Length: 141
Image 1 (cartoon, one colour):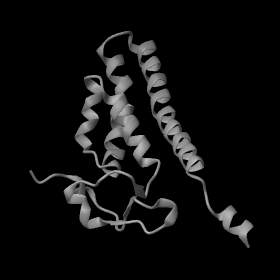
Image 2 (image 1 turned 60 degrees about the vertical axis):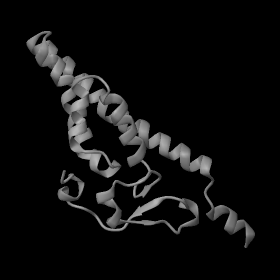
Image 3 (image 1 turned 180 degrees about the vertical axis):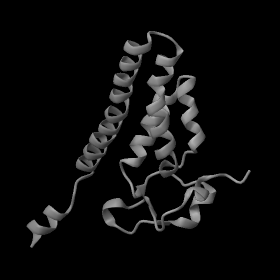
Image 4 (image 1 turned 90 degrees about the vertical axis):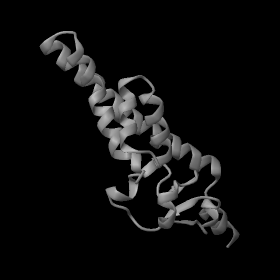
């Protein structure tokens, strides 16, 4: 019986490792295709703003899609145009990798959908209790 209880418990190191692998997979899955897309457009149309914008088009779309699940706003995808987009996407990927649990405080408009997790493995995290539509992620201000 004690062996079963030990096997059922997952160490925090393993959880962190799995989260890191998921984060890296998300980053590679978005950045590498965007670089390939840039090379294809550059080969067809030459260097210029079209090739540069094509390099951030896919990451911007992925950031806008995943942002609400990480307590960010969709408009944060525009940060890819000025530089810190890779940092913001890395934070979003790190947060999404733990879903549906959250180890950060939710925004005020998200609190009605959250509750504290009672799972001993995820103690101290928030749990999303009901899915939200797009309106649940937009600020009314």
